[in-house]
Amino acid sequence: MSELVVTDLHAGVAGRKILKGVSLTVRSGEVHAVMGPNGSGKSTLSHVITGKPGYEVTSGSVTLDGVDLLSLPAWERARAGLFLAMQYPTAVPGVSLEAMLTASAVAGDRDSDSIRAEIHAEAKRIGLAEALISRPLNVDLSGGEKKRNETVQLGVLRPRIAILDEIDSGLDVDAMKAVTSRIEEATNDEEAPLGVLAITHYKRLFEELKPDHVHVFAQGVIQTSGGAELAEELERTGYGEWTSDEEPEESDVAEAFHDPFGEATFADHLKLHESGPTGNIFE
Ligand code: ADP
Ligand code: MG
Image 1 (cartoon, rainbow, N blue to C red):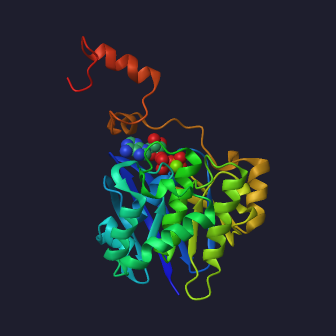
Image 2 (image 1 turned 60 degrees about the vertical axis):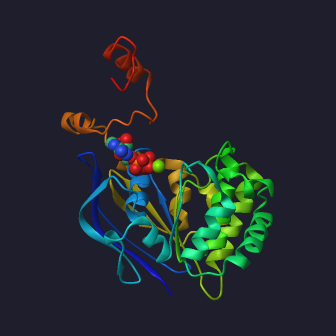
């Protein structure tokens, strides 16, 4: 049995505090839902636990079966049994799903010969087209194909604990059923049941994947927790009770990291064009 333990986690990015004391324990076979408004820090939580570079942890701890994850690079956290299904899966031109999964399996001391058959079996199970197994990872895939792709990875790699960051976004009804029922099956595996931390906005994720605990996440902390009925209630009431009308402090905004490749607003474009005669962001 495995246990992911997050204790009083405080973390931020670019001088901005985002996680303000998160504590949570996910055990094998359990499904924990994290629901909260946009921008509250849910993806940040997933990134900090899995080790995406660029975040600063100021206090608290994250352990998986007693191993201190925060001191490990992302790939070693994965090898320890942690998996992240990304909200926006990264496209990797030149590397196929098959090559990536074979390399991961070998790094995890698994036999590379059996992996190929497993990838095809998992793809078939959740309806990922065969052709996508050998195509470059996530390049030009539809939203639904990307999420099926993430689910094939989960099925093949068999992590102990999986964080699903909006795995339901972009899925049509059939894909939703395929993806969520595959993950629910993994949580019921007799030998090594999967523990899940599922970030979502919608209770429709829980038609197949049954949550044991639902947490309301807002303003960088878990505000309240309950059972599956809390997801129903949230769909009716929204998050108004836990959100604040306050604008971020001026200093927070000024220190925020500007990602020239990130999603820019129209106002950002105007600013860029004012910044130089050509509007070249590298000037
Ligand atoms: P959620 O997933 O709950 O919608 P995120 O964790 O993605 O929220 O973001 C939380 C807040 O942190 C948002 O206000 C977002 O703009 C900010 N944020 C995330 N990444 C960065 C970054 N690299 N630089 C500055 N701010 C960031
Ligand atoms: Mg997010």
